[in-house]
Image (cartoon, rainbow, N blue to C red; front, side, top):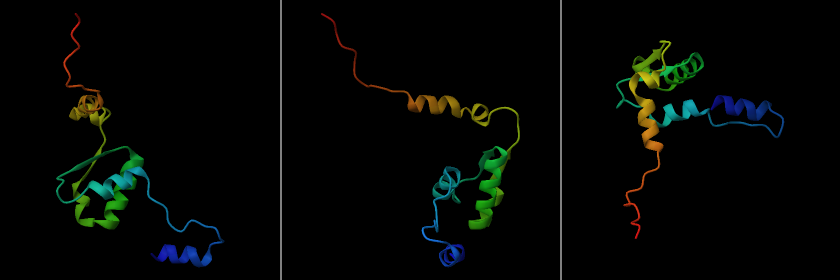
Length: 100
C-alpha cells in the first residue's frame, strides 16, 4: 500500500501504480495454503521468487517449501509428466461408428 501511495505522489502521469505479479506468484497466492504438506520448487529464479513471496505473506508456510536441486526433471521424478499428458489428451466416450 505504501508503495502505491509513493508511486502516486512521485510518478508522472500516466504511471502504473500496481500490476499483477507473474504467473508463479499468482499460482502460489491462489492455491498454496496450510492444506499442502510440501511444495517442491525447481529453478533458481522460481525458488527466489516463491520463497521471497511466501516469507513475506505467509511466513508460517516457508518451512513447507522445498528446493529441487537434482539434475533430473522434477516432473519426471514424480510421474507428473505422464499424468499431465493424459489429462490433456482428447477423449471421447462414444462408441466408434458402425460400418454397414
